[in-house]
Length: 188
Length: 188
DNA sequence: GTCTATAGGAGGATAGAC
DNA sequence: GTCTATCCTCCTATAGAC
Picture (cartoon, each protein chain N blue to C red):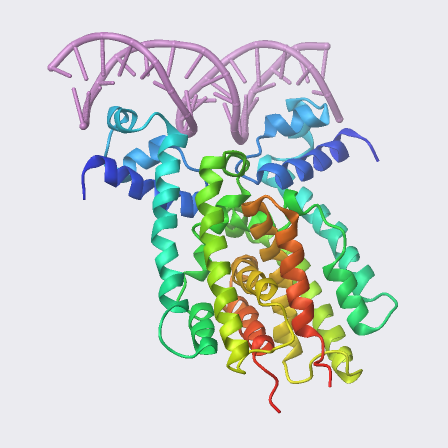
């Protein structure tokens, strides 16, 4: 689709990623979309309504991505490695994680829910694969898979933060590699 | 000190924590500080100048906090546990980590530097304590302390993100406990 | 040092014509 | 569906009086 409504949503997705909710103005969205005021307020009741659509769309795009790595082929540990090492636009930050800083986003259940869903579904899948890995003897056996799944998701999100602070993707890579080294079963 | 200049900095610290750089207006800072326009523009050249002072002050307050736990008494592993489990205003987020989402902050070296320093100094101390822990047999020996130090810092920052997304401090705790379980040496 | 006045621009939205 | 006009508030800063 490349009608005005879709272009507005896409532009909102980009700008929310770049500047967050507070930093994104209706005007900027319209300009990037090549649409006018009237067009935007015809399709959406206002900024938050458009943001809802944009965040839902971004969430819908991200879930399959983690699914592709974690439910893909390969040994459990290999799938976890693939997910953590997947190519990311590290210095631009996480398009969904960055939004939880905005008061307006966290305060509006309709804006927050899709974000939480992305994390929760990835964590659930990570936990399952970790458990498989334990059964296969690839993953350290004496840890709680549910807990470690949250840890790994946090490493990714925190990796973004540290990389941006340091302005260096290597910080993200270090966080991830450190986590992977900890998850692997101890060599006998 | 409780002169206008200091009150302005304190108010800016609070608002930057709550709303980020973009979401914080000079006017709001002035109101919270009980100071007028003239006062603020007398002491600071503008918003970014005041933000620089506020961020530096916040950074100066946070560094000793990690130092207290990591350079404190106790076994290496106990110190790492103490740092990761330290009381935090989890749902309000990290007062320093939240700022790296702002384009204006990351783009201004004077704003970004103090933030990076907080992380880098904590990571360096974590690495040192991890190494001590390895020598003491408390910490898993087959991992790179420098890398794992970054991982642990990422867990903290990511823990904030996940907790805010889920609106539940337990997410932070799970991330931290998972990390601690991974760091500990495998029981023989 | 602090106050008030002033100012151009952006933010967010509504109204009615086409 | 989209355009233009209009509105009021907030943003950030400057100027000059006190």
